[in-house]
Amino acid sequence: MKNILTGIRPTGNLHLGHYFGAVSNWIKLQDDYNSYIEIADVQALTDNFNDPDKVRKNVRELTIDLLSCGIDPKKVTIFIQSMIPEIAEVTIYFSNLVTISRLYRNPTIKTEISQKKELFGHSGESVTYGFLGYPVSQAADITVFDGQLVPVGEDQLPLLEQCREIVRKFNTIYGETFVEPEQMLTENKRIKGLDGNEKMGKSLGNAIYLIDDYETISKKIMSAVTDPNKIKKDDKANPDVCMVYYYHKLVNQDNLETVCQECKNGSRGCVACKKELINKMMEFLKPIQEKRKYYEENMDVVDNILKEGTLKAQKYAKNKMKLVRENMKIDYFE
Image (cartoon, rainbow, N blue to C red):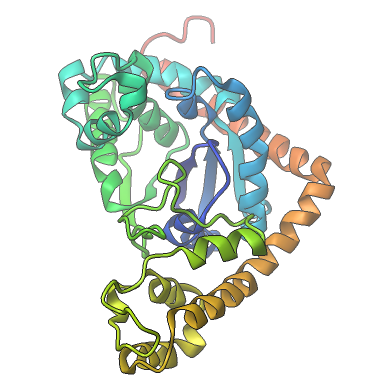
């Protein structure tokens, strides 16, 4: 089976955007590939360097979320990035092959710098070396584990292409060492936020989290954006511009046609529609939250999964580095 490598930053709990945009796809892939999921704490520190407690806490929280969603540790290797020193070593070697100007041209980096004005200033003059270079570290993540396929959304394609450039240059200089990864575009596109924003995110305050309880879900959904042209309860509306209908499509497939038609003909009020969505959302989240409760009450199980996955990853990385050092002529005493 081919190797798949994907990473996720431990900066907070998972929300619906993570689930439908990535995690649900990883669950489908885990039976047919050698899957590695990296808890990317080093990458999280590139823009959370001043809050290490947050990153440390969320390593466990994120792992619990993944397990609760259905990631099977018997099929998937879950490991902690910072515990694999070989990644840092390869990052240094790769950094010799990439210019600063090339990193600044990366569309993903340019977008993220503009979004993090509180860290880097309006003109990006305070961008740190670590943040600018995280595509190089990401390339090391993938190649140390011979990631043949990388599940990505379209917005991540520039990062993967940069990785491919690095691999080609390294292999040209030092001989065939690393696998050039191929993209595996995810089936699901980015999930919109409750406010209609194209992206659901913590910083935007428009996300439904997998850990949210009934009261929290109710409050969020009751404030969701609906068709602004529907003023009265029996006004006809356009479900295609309503975020409540958008989420019905995610968690209420069985009654979707009825929801759509009643919205269009004016026989469904927004409050009733939101209340139905609240119940359907809680039905969807119930099995995830029940699994989460188990893991929260058995943290030793979570720790053992992380330890075993990290040990397995360490073994793979050490073996890979033998070839890397040999080809680079730095295997002095091996």
